[in-house]
Length: 117
Length: 109
Image 1 (cartoon, rainbow over the protein chains, first blue to last red):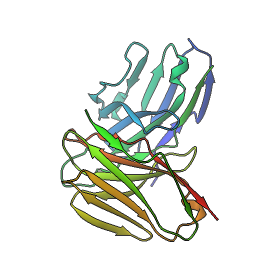
Image 2: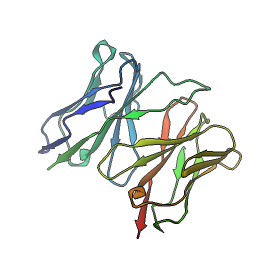
Image 3: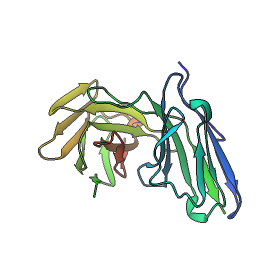
Image 4: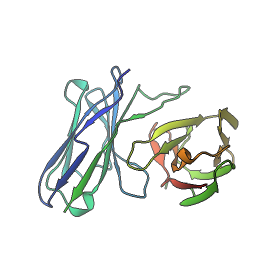
């Protein structure tokens, strides 16, 4: 079974530039997550999708970050314009819809390491 | 607020046993997860506890006490490849994972 795919793996941009990340979840996983992980910290949830609908985007800086999941499969996360503090690893994860009584494991992609200069 | 606490860094010797503790305060509880994360890689699932007690999986075991808001991950017969960060995460009442900052485990020969 193929895992979660992400691209690019690395990206270096200058502040005020734009960048986009792509994620393809595990086949059949309706729930998709974008996390931001700053060095030395745990992942921080940016946005959660269920199929093509947003479940939670309360921690997404909406003045500069946007995300979409057209057709409920692939997803893109965009930053426009980037700031120095956006330097982090952006992780995409997927799972079956979480519910009580089940494992609710999230499967992670390899991440995109973003450096903003 | 919601909070997960775990030590920042621990050092242990190859072949020994190490216990990584995690305490939590969250809005609701739908299970506690431990993930392993090697430097520059994505987190990978290690264990899951939803009921009190010990779950054993090979060299790794995880314990949960919901009344105390406490869990630990026990790693036995440590190997050099176990050098990694270990992340504790709690699934809250909205089925979202609240993550700790991770414990960096350094294994020395």
